[in-house]
Length: 97
View 1: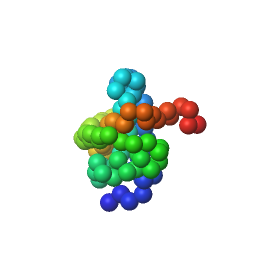
View 2: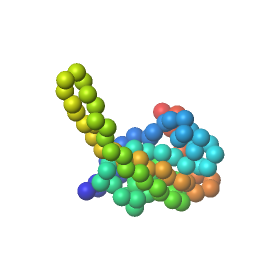
View 3: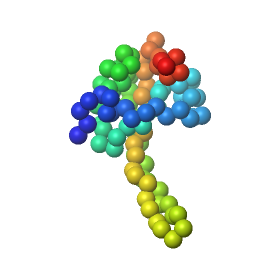
View 4: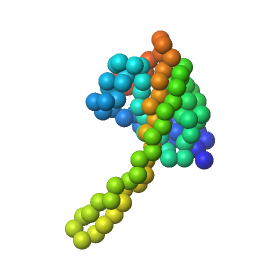
């Protein structure tokens, strides 16, 4: 069970699609632990970034099987959260540094 807000938000996902979502519909994409639920994600984003969250959508991804020479392995499963912010709230990752 994930308890601390810093443990819920693993990292922001900065991709072309995430940038279009941020610019077009005020949504931000994060990578989160598989055990995190929508309520924990909402509270963590509001606490860490000081914004109001309107909606949280989550997607689970199965880790891919990879091969390196004669050996097979599996990447870990992971979860993505798309957080829609209230109008007037914004998160700018580049300005925060």
